[in-house]
Image (cartoon, rainbow over all chains, first blue to last red):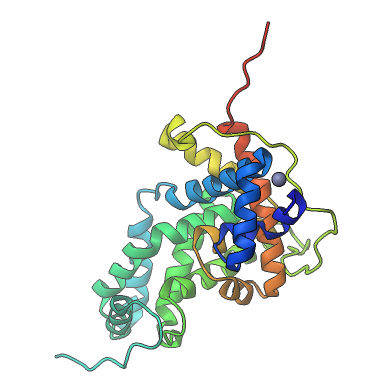
Length: 79
Length: 208
Ligand SMILES: [Zn+2]
């Protein structure tokens, strides 16, 4: 497998969706080719870091959400 | 007063299904548990797609309010979060369209430019790059980087890679084909890793 072919399979490789034989070829290329090795590793890290981070929830947001729903549950006119 | 809940369909997490059933009977506590469980994820989705904190807050409020009023429509054919994400994405797109006036957001543009997909700059990263920054700084970096992708890429990256929806779910939710999801995901991944390289790459030592 060469670099272009690796790029073509990159998504499936990262997602573990390649058939065994192609996966083995891809793995060999990634181990031997420094550029592709870096691309694979940094793509993995990119996904990882985004999955793990949550922007902090603004303080009052939860309260606002529940207030909205509470109002819908008991509209003032219907009391 | 125990009520028999309908059989939980397909794949939905049992606990979610029970909470949904209870919330349908106007058990606000049950709905609040669903909110607690998913509000951070909905907020993250909203902030990544709109790139804007105040909009994201509105979207979270609107999403849960709509979810509550439409609970009857949730049949458990998907995970509860996937159902919420659909509402949130639609809210986000509506806001983006409004903000940009009549300029249509080209999410359903199927054809990707034919240019070859190739990483341009290849730099290795420091180990544990996320530990090199304070939490708030890291959040700002991630937010800025994903917001600078075009909408069709960041929406796919958000749903597929961050929220871990399937290719099919993502395609259906965004109204695009599965090949389009795949090709956009590849571009999104490559572009994002390059953007993050600005912050995470090993800095080359300059020789005097
Ligand atoms: Zn290579």
